[in-house]
Length: 411
Image (cartoon, rainbow, N blue to C red; front, side):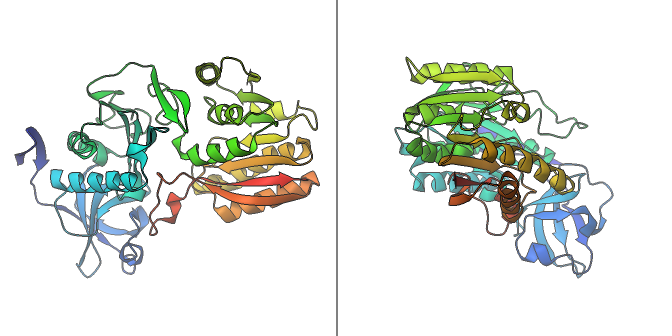
């Protein structure tokens, strides 16, 4: 049975069948009681036979006590928890959650910042909406649904976003073709869900202009999580020769030139990313000392001379998608960091990052220690680096602290 439920002149379909149940094994409710938002498949003792991917399920412990509601997934993470209360997952639910996410961004001043009109609007578990990412680009909201269950609620989510942004939402684009499971009927093409916009979407970050490749680019088109780290780099860039490795579309490159760097070299394996990087440089500077290179960064690091650069940025893509990949990922991080430390000029600054969720800060720190020792160079840690404040993570979900890094001084 389906009911039609209306809000703000928009009608949504919500299933009113009996809630589907899963029951956990004895003692497997401890993480749920600690408000962790994931339930792994190995914790499930039994479940209703007709549960399909994306169904909303009620979770009970082995004593038949209600624990939580969430979306079922045919994956190692079997349930992404939406609520620890027995409440309806309807329009009012989404309206309240998204309003709370917007209120947090207003507290940070993000909706009234004349120098920056790009920010993370919804950050999955960090905003208590697992599997949902929404980025705001000067009125364009780009969505990524990472689960079928969340995708099923896209219409209500879009309406709640429009309500919460109070006229600041000019268009909504769904960019989930690469984030939904491959073998289901919900794998939709990327398209606009509300209004449309030109592909040339230009935004401001810290007063710098950027073209956002929201249609074909990585993630939602821009690495917003590095915003505050780019501000930090800009502060230290004056008169330095900067290498921006894994540059993507040139966020750190623009920041370095804005900070009066002596020269900037951007290196990325993607020709399209480098082309957009060059357009971003041109958007901001009539003349510049910028060089772009399409190359594999690991190979490129072998070609540079010692003392050629006195600021190096290492911001690679995630080397470890799963915990089983961590060992090899750390080898990869150690390799590129060792090369950078060996070649950077004395007194140089290294911005080094990992965005691999499975790599802990302790893992990353140990890797940097090893890379420094192998390079036989002394380094001093200036500060630890993390994602910008519009990427909050829940205290109950430490895995949400995925971006980690250091700013180091190399003697």
